[in-house]
Image (cartoon, rainbow, N blue to C red; front, side, top):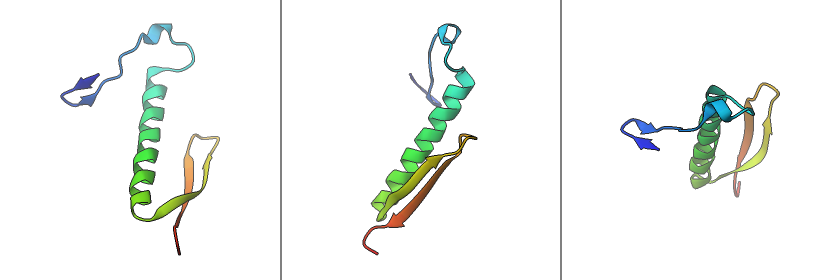
Length: 68
């Protein structure tokens, strides 16, 4: 749901057992940052060479410039 400060996540957190609100929001922000960063870099001539997710949850991305 859109608000004055951005978007709000509205859910019945009591009924969700697979995750918590904090974890969901953290993972959502992380994925948004990844998509936004990769999109910007693709516009600048890069593509993903490798991508992995560490046990800690950290995402590692190796990019390379296309055509070089």
